[in-house]
Amino acid sequence: MNAPATTAVESDVAVECVAVQKSFDGTPVLKSIDLSVPHGQVMCVIGPSGSGKSTFLRCINHLERIDGGLLRVAGEMVGYREHKGRLHELRHHEIARRRADIGMVFQSFNLFPHLTVLENIIEAPMAVRKNQRDDAVADARRLLDKVGLTGREDAYPRMLSGGQQQRVAIARALAMRPKLMLFDEPTSALDPELVGEVLSVMKELAAEGMTMIVVTHELGFAREVADTVVFMDGGYIVEQGAPAEMFANPQTERCRDFLGKVL
Image (cartoon, rainbow, N blue to C red; front, side):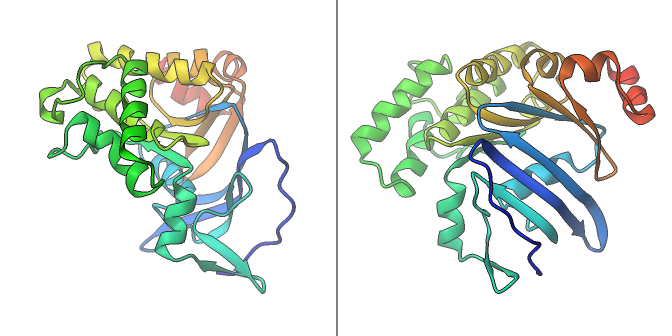
C-alpha cells in the first residue's frame, strides 16, 4: 500500500485517522474516515447497523487491515511501518507489541470458557507483558474489586451473568494497562436490567481520564459521558460534535432522521 504523506503527530492526540478506507470483497465499508481523539477524551460512535462502526473500531487495533489512508495510535501505526513511501505490514509479534497498549471489549465477552475469572485476567499480562504471576494476580484482584466482582476469582464464565462476564472482560482489558480502550457495543448482548452495571464501570473509567472510543446504541450514556459524538452512515462520518449540540440540534437531515427514530 502506498503511504500517504506523513506529518508530525501532536502529543495530545491519542488516535489519528486520515482518509482511512476499508473494503470487503470489493464493497467499500469505510470511505475516507478522518478524525482525531485527544488523550483523556471519550468519543462515542453512533449510527445504524451496517454503517461501518465496528469495522472502524477493529481497524484501530489492526484486527482488520486498512486498504488506504493513515491510522496512528499514540503517534504509531499499529500494523504498519513506512519505508520509502510505502506501508509494509509488521510481523505478528511487532503487531502484538503495539496492540498491547489498546484494550478492546467486544459485544460477546470473548472470555476463555475453560479458565476461571482470575485466569482469564492474568493470562495476557503474563504472556505478553511478562509480568510475574504474583504481581498479575494482585493486579487482577484489584481490578475485580474495581468492577464490583470481588470474590468471583474462581468462578468460570458459565457461572456468571452476562453483565458480570462483560465486567470481567473489562477487567481483563485493563490488566494490560492500556493507553486506549475500545468498546464495541459492549451492552448489546445484555438483558436490559444488566446494562447499567456495565455502563457504571465505563463511566468510572471515563471519570478517571481513560481515553475511550465507544461504539454504542446507549444514547443516554453518550449524552452523559462523551466529549465528542460521531454519527456514521454508509461508511462515512456524516456529522460529529459535542453531545449537547448533536442531540439537541443535529445539522444533517440523515442524523436528524436517525435520532428522531431512536431518541
